[in-house]
Length: 334
Image (cartoon, rainbow, N blue to C red):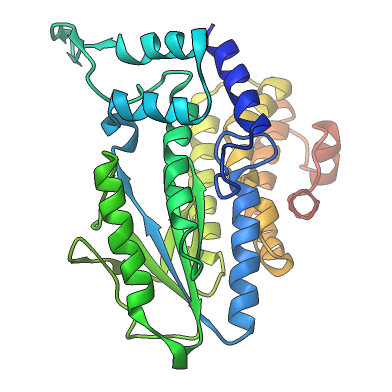
């Protein structure tokens, strides 16, 4: 039932164009990859023009848990949700219960007093309905851009170094902090990050509630590690390490010799690691990525081949054809 309600609710929101264009989460035709491509194209354009680009990656602490029921229902009404659907959603939101389990011990069941419920089918869409008001507020400030994926928010401020005025972005951060506090959304300065792209400006420092936002050269943006020069060497290293560990763990623990089973395991647990976000890579990075991962695929396919043909010499082209695989180099360049 919840899935049916979600589909109808999403259709309604898209029809009335309620959700802001800056929100890429849980929407048809939008994704983390789409947002990253648009964001990187903007940064490259501004940096090529000689500008400095300060990006603040905001951390919304326990955002799904702290929203009041009143705030959620109020925003549903703002989204023109009414009648029986509003009544049904109100019941689903306000009549939830929870308990805490530690080992085999359980607490008493208690009424939920806030939040949209982790794991609740409707949680994400209810949250982005509430979060839409942040976009509405930020769009009042023409000096910045912002991008949102669910509760992941980044503010983008571009300027020529000679025109630098830290008060522009700082005032927006102050306004955002106050606005979020009023809406029961907590911003966490210790987990927020400042990354500077383009022309360096050491004087750019920003604060949330008087706590300075840490500047970093590398940050994790929607699952992709990105450096302040837009290179992804750190991400490639992380993916290589993660893929390598998973591959050897599978080869060690799975004792079957069946190629079809081993390929399915590879496709399920390993391929998503290196395929996620690959359209974001530029051509030179894709080549480096392909070269670094190719060895792992060769190793895995070689193990499959030798498990079934222990006395035969390994032929990579043969095994790739047999398993209906392309070379890693061609996969990531598609």
